Length: 338
Image 1 (cartoon, rainbow, N blue to C red):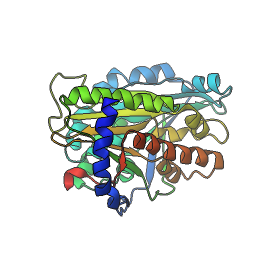
Image 2 (image 1 turned 180 degrees about the vertical axis):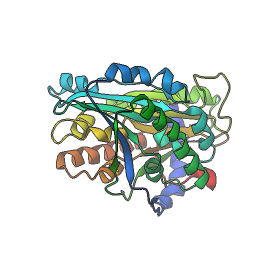
Image 3 (image 1 turned 90 degrees about the horizontal axis):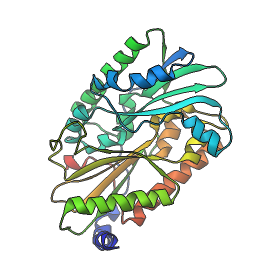
Image 4 (image 1 turned 120 degrees about the vertical axis):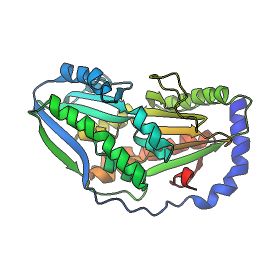
């Protein structure tokens, strides 16, 4: 309760200041037409692939964070049916490269970690390895900085080269972008009164945040602390008082999109939803951002009414939860560029 009072009293002061900046900044996406790269292989490669996502990818700087294998089994248990032999999420983060970019534009956290997906339909027994193209991710985040874009794109090249070397017989193809949503990001600020200890304050906020989502049926499918890496004891983001990324999952939503009627398992390149939150030293506000689910729908050209209804549901529910924590809608801009 003390935490909520700290947040709500500060929010009341800040609301009027932010009221007039809610409109999305006009953004023109790049000329990139590729949404995702796909590698298709005949048969079951699950065990081999899951080992591949560990040391071989760590050797090129990509660390596996909170993997979720056999998501299709969860669907079968909770819904009673699945059209998939395999659906697995391997959240990857190249924290060394990503942190450098976060000091230029913190919105990189919207796809850090990102999902390296593997799926196989019962209907054809072909395994597909896929991930979002970095250019497409940057366009969803609406990042225009040339240095950030160039380095983020370069970061993915060793990953694709390693996949192609591991699976030389795989057929390579691309999922093409079908459209671009007007609103691709949801952005918030949660103002708070200056606490005695920022770490204790944020620990309490994290507990409240996660409980608020779990109460509404969401799963915290992953958590990554970008400031305090598991790979070093050093403070690797000194320009941030806090920087974390949650991976949000919602089983009924994901089943409706990836499985069930008219399944689109390749849409899992957007899952779990990466929601970043950070505090800059001396700024008494938590800045939060996440791609909208509408961004998925537009990029994939989703027209199925049931899928669109679920997308609209989450695009309404998630902001409502943040608002209940004292969050205020903000424009999708790079605050470090101001």
